[in-house]
Length: 391
Ligand SMILES: [Fe+2]
Image (tube, rainbow, N blue to C red; front, top):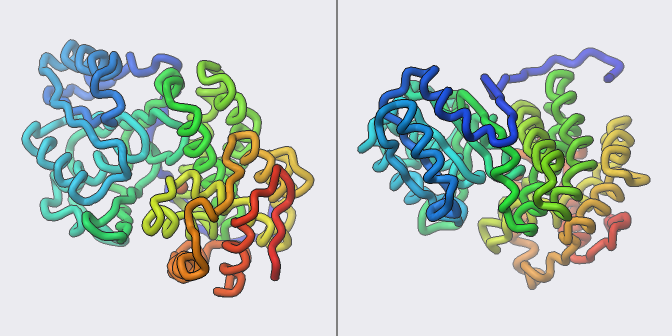
């Protein structure tokens, strides 16, 4: 615990979390309980021809007497066109019960599209921070199918501006799902690469929220629990995709990490992962895996007693070594050079990362020279050892 009292702001970003193996079957009861008459389901396109979509339709039809409207979200990261297509589908269905099922893309798309139902306009018109929105009367149930973004318990969403490299951030408590339904059985079919990258995104949420300047005694227990669970169970979920405990614990941890970062914010790894995604199409979780061990090495002294807690959670002599070891176990110990090839491109990533609001949340305030040194360190895989930052 910190020695001196610190003021803080903490927003509870979830109202109800339900965790159960095969918990998807509870959707019917939840719809009945809500008195739903007009359900709609937004799903990841991954589930288009599978048993999951048919199961959701049957459960909701039996509970409400109405066949739910279905809308499938493309697998790539969402943009404003994706959101507006989903909005049109939801507007046609006029739903009183919305299920968002999938990874971060499907959940983020559904959250913003539903917000547009009560605040009509373009997707871009509801982007940004601090805007007041009218609530929508429907109940929103988010069902994550990968352990990663934690979008099921956050008030934010991210999407590209169609036809550009610009990432829009959406943030409003009106987007917070009413119920997060965590069913580990749905994540068993995720490819190993997705388990690894999205899982490392959750790790990065937990660590960056824990050491953030906006961390508090309210967010720390969530972040610390998430780190401990992911350190123990993410490698198991990666090696044994059908391991029930591993899948369940990783989903719970990703949800806890998001509850923490919803208030505590993030740090330099996310500041760097954003331009890697926007400019070089590096998947978000992989961008974090490339950055976090180097960022942790850079932050080590500024983390104070929390550095030892992070190190212990991931089984390393230091926080950076533990995170580097986990990255190697997950097959993510790669060089930045595979994605960003030239000095000029690295400089553009550094400049863009410095513009992120997360830079101010990081425990050590980075200059552009520091950012360049971190990005330079990301060129060398660490083999599970300590990254070297040349400063
Ligand atoms: Fe993230």
